[in-house]
Image (cartoon, rainbow, N blue to C red; front, top):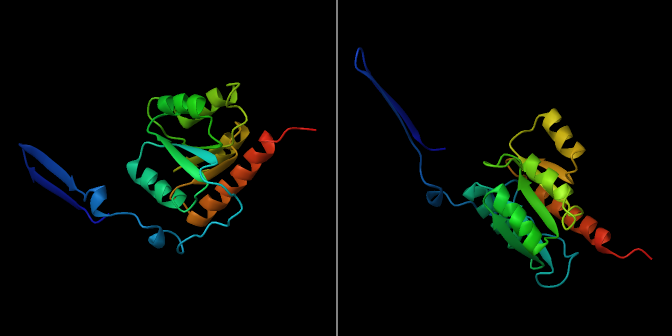
Length: 180
């Protein structure tokens, strides 16, 4: 992370420890440097802003990365929420096409948020893509059992992320089609 760790200690007096890290602004994310290169989204979806994508995430760096990826998609409007409670409010107000949700949110976990969404008559059909640092098989299985559409692990793999987003948008489109 290009930082510095330091310790000063004096017997009988105490210790002083420090950590210096550069700010996020000093290291801007670039889609060109993520994964194997720039991802060009297939033009399956047409129309300006026809899909709303709600991303519930506390980490500003992850939000910026998602903004850069979604900027390639003229048919998607990105809506962000920095905590689970605000995310659920926006889900009811905006009725997004797809929801991306970090599993580790303060105040309300993504799992709790998912349970609430699955019992909400306005949002229960919206595909939710879970994003998490937890890559343990039991965590992934639990998320899938609770009804996430897909469970992606961080750091985000650009191609996998964009393919999953395409699949979720297609799935949401099929859910919205009237049954004849």
